[in-house]
Length: 154
Image 1 (cartoon, rainbow, N blue to C red):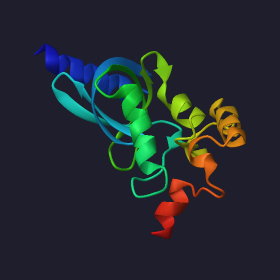
Image 2 (image 1 turned 30 degrees about the horizontal axis):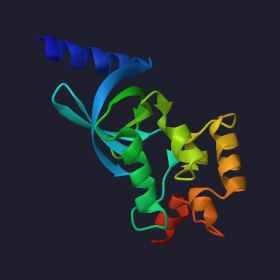
Image 3 (image 1 turned 180 degrees about the vertical axis):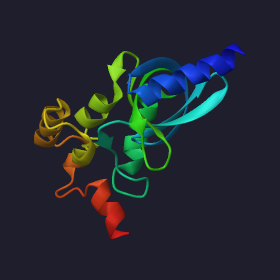
């Protein structure tokens, strides 16, 4: 009964547009911008808001996944739901070990700021500029291809 009420409360808050934050155990890392968490014995796939990481077969795809794993795998994360994507995944801001995951991935050159889904005044843009200037991560390549272009080309 309590489980059903909790699920209904989460659904109501999500539909009403109120930001919902909750702790969840990270049980899987799909790539540099997607992880799976466990909430009340239910696994939920989470897409990290505002960033897009290299695909697994793309340059830096494996390193991006490893960076996210090092930060979040098997830790208790704080999930703040933002929306749902077209694949039904929860899009959320995620904190692991007290650090914002999107910021850490962009700062390390392990993800791009996803212009299509980011605010123009997002602080992630300055992190990306600093990573690019320092040639960290994917910015070490002469001309890195954003994942959205890589997917379109395939």
